[in-house]
Amino acid sequence: MNEMKRSIFLLTAGWLTLVSSTWAQKAWTLDDCISYALENNLSIKEAKISTQSAEEDVKGAKGALLPTLSASTNHSVGYTPWTSSSSEGGVSVDKAYYSGSYGLNARWTVWDGNKSTNTVKQNKLNREQSRLQEQITANTIQEQIAQLYIQILYLNEALKVSEQSLETSKKNEERGQQMQEVGKMSKADVAQLSAQRATDEYNIVEIRSNIAKYNLQLKQLLELDVHEAFSVATPDIPDEQVLAIIPSLDNVYEQAVAQRPEIKVEELQVESNELSIKMARAGYLPTLSLTGGVGTSTGSRSNDSFGSQLKTNFDMSAGVTLSIPIFDGRQTKTAVSKARLKQEIEKLEVIYAKDDLYRTVEEYWLDAETNQQKFRAAQTTELSEQHSFDLLQEQFQLGLKNIIELMTGKDKLLSAQQNKLQSKYQTLLAQQMLKFYSTGTLK
Image (cartoon, rainbow, N blue to C red; front, side, top):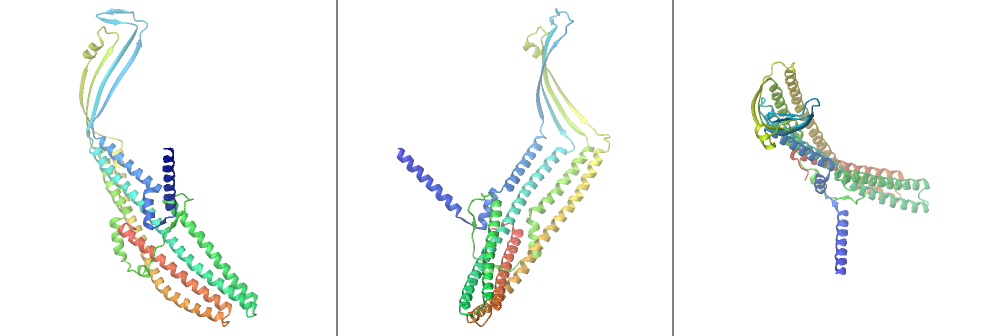
């Protein structure tokens, strides 16, 4: 039996180790990152709790429409030192005595100018706004993830270009040393080739450092342990995807206005303020309430039994209260005026929100258009510079070109490659953001 338990333990431990290792080695796609963040990001969890709190406010407002019922009891002991103890008419008169009372009281506000019902409606709007704020938080996190993810993809590809550049620099340095040995190149020229190789090595270190930095930021958004191994998947992104047709600015904006939660939140706030005006105007209207209660009492000075006293002293009451406001020191009028002014501000906030949205969409649209054009030009430039550098390298190997011409050609090629990569991934990011703002999804 002990051997069986030991085997089960070892198998379980091995399975957990395998799962942990597999998860650590997992290459995260953009979909993986977004799905994980939506479940684990602390800001999103906090927003969900706020939505739950808003739901409780709705329940509380609905409960306020119902009658209230309360039970009360009071017990006291008294002492009258100058009263003579006696028994008169069946009533015991003692210096020390006890009394108690018991009651049930109910109250129901039948009508308060619809203030309570409008409060329910307003809390429902607040609940919906809280849900939209939750979406806003989730959208912000997704946007940040996409930006970091594409930046990492760009740096990963830039790293490959720099590594290729380093290999070329090493070969040129080796060739330069060989030419120096046979007297065809000076030490100064070889030193320049060595400096070029060192510069490429420095660039690689810097790119790797930036990749680590952006990986850390992405892990923090995902709420992953900072010490956990993490890497993103590198998808194959064909040039056709980068050169895809960019939708019109007006079309993206119209779809964004229809579905972005930022606009819906402001529009709901206008509705909520309409209810605030009605609630403030309820101060001009009367309030009608119903009250009722039952009660009884007991005391030690009575010679009747406890049960008999409860029955004898039992009473019931019911009443109607009508409260009519006449003059309240201008409080209601001030409240109505301020609610109307706030409504005007909220209408302006809707306009501001739409303007901000348009500016954001327009910036992404311009980025997509501009960088797509740059990418087309960079494709041609890279081919030309690659062909030119290949010729320069052949001529350098034969001693027909000097070190300055070779390094200049290499710098031009590297610049063309970097420009192509930069425009490629800036276009890709802008395309993804336009899709996100028009459809609400990055997946």
